Image (cartoon, rainbow, N blue to C red; front, side, top):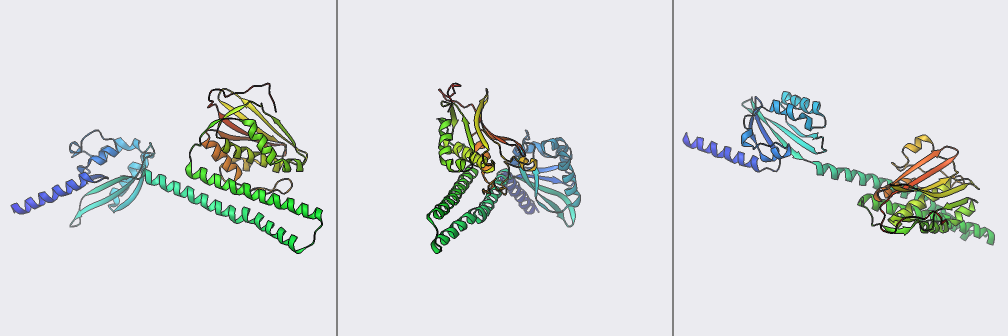
Length: 377
């Protein structure tokens, strides 16, 4: 008999040691919900200031009521425990979230001996990092699907058109003036494809890295001049009055490459949706907190329904005033880049009157940054 008792004590000691050293929070209760065994990990998880030994015999019903406010849904926390205890069935990976955004998975195992209920075991594990990684994976999968969708439709279409135009030139005879027009069309299709491809690459990189690029001072007017040169063919082709009112010495402390992509996308959109002989204005405002760059057009404007989700989801791009195409990706990319630049993108738009896209850049000025109001481009 003594040997059996010793074996039982040794077995209990090994079980207690196993529970104590588990890297998961473990709580064992009897049929009256009094604590029989609890490990330090459980105490740490729920910020219990007492030692595991001092918790033996504590009534868990009262403890659950006292700790419910620690969870995001206090009422559900208590009612879920009561339901699990009532059913006395094994529960695995039951999810909980605290008010601090910590995610737990909880297992419940009822203990029976000869069909007599003796109590139960709870096991908790912190899955916050796993949830975060899962969300990142979902985000990456959505981005992958969107990229494939754009590649299949928006990039494939202009490439197919370009191939068709080249085959047409090879098979048919055209006058020199007709060839010039076809070549202009080819250039436009190729330019659009390159811009789209570049946007895709930058957006993918920005989304995956989700990091802030290096910043330095530069003259903002340099960006405008480069973009105006790049897009001059499209501006002049629609006889658009392109007005720039930016001081020559206005310095911006940001990442020039990222901001260049944002401004180019916004100006390209303005050209696309501005009618022939319309107006595009680029000007700035400045206050104590931020510099605003306005890109305002006299275009078709944006409907209220589209305005609400403009920066939050890639959507099918509408044709421009002369059937110009886009990817539906540009504004999502712009907002993503501005977020990484610690700035943001806003818009004021009225259907039939036009849109004013506003780039807002915080004052992270290095010595020498600023502007002079008496020097204009």
